[in-house]
Image 1 (cartoon, rainbow, N blue to C red):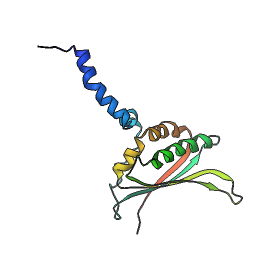
Image 2 (image 1 turned 60 degrees about the vertical axis):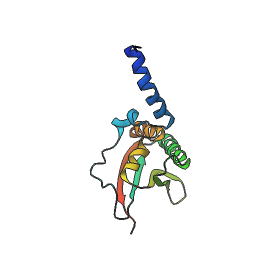
Image 3 (image 1 turned 120 degrees about the horizontal axis):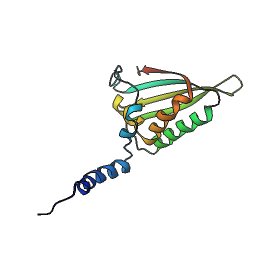
Image 4 (image 1 turned 90 degrees about the vertical axis):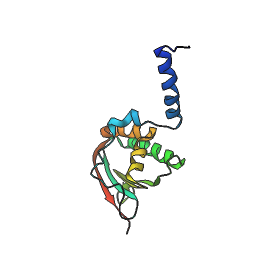
Length: 147
């Protein structure tokens, strides 16, 4: 009878799991403590989707890094790696001369609330959750629905 040491057995059991989670970009363990509490929100709205409008005012001097984090998310979504993210449209608010004001609006549409959670758990989403609190002066998230 062949016996495995407990360390070898642990490695044989955990490494394939770890490797497959890295390959598919599963960062859920890495940022689980950063996820916002979405328990008060419905899983879907009457349109059958989950849509939010996010309004953000950046901390003065934090605009460039905030835009970089959002652009990383937008690039990841554009790869098609999040098929349940239907719309991810970040825009900046400008003044009457077309100059950025430090305010931003994201229009986001998902197949369900669970897709938003998955969106947050991507590498780019985790980076945003980790760094954005120092970059955001105020934020409102509004649940919306098509009619």
